Length: 292
Image (cartoon, rainbow, N blue to C red):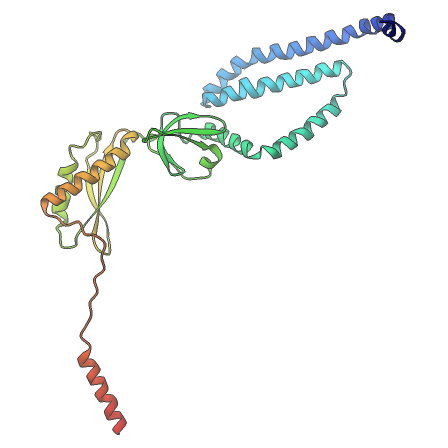
């Protein structure tokens, strides 16, 4: 206590504190104004952005996160400037720290940027059925960093957004009705029209088919050991694609077997000609040539 009385001039400290009060008050008022302004503009700005078609999650990120904190940071800088803090030096230090953090978290930042691209481009939405990165399932959630998919195995797959935008993605729900193709090969000796009729009869009662588009069977190609047919069935919802594909294969196999139509396995047929007469004739020519 004695040391405090000897080394601290209470009168001078009180005088400086009183002189500093206007600056402190101004700093508080400025920061409060920025905070209130952030709250005031967030709701109408968010509504405007939603009307433009931006995804709700992206709007929430831009308005409630990025904009809010940017405004608060600017308010804090202005308030510190009122208190006499060297703002330029502080900003320089923050810039260096930001660069270091950016290098350390570049994978995370690339996924965040990819997430923003997904929200803006909308290649898929929550509840869509997609195939990406060798995964087929329903999109359950889209975040800035990852996309979550529930597969038909009832597993939960988390895929980084950067991986999604850098790979091929197939959306099975975006266009409504979906065609399911099932390749089936028949032997060359079999009648194509008969096989077509048999398979169309086999798939006509499969579940989940579209009532607006009829199934058909086309010749997809002429393979090495089979005539390659493709059975094509339309469904109304992409979530039934795999189940329909499996059911088509089973139904066609059973129907072709019942009709006695052969489904050949891959094989190779070799034809060997009899070369004995030609060999004897050539030897005779060589012998005659030697005698001459």
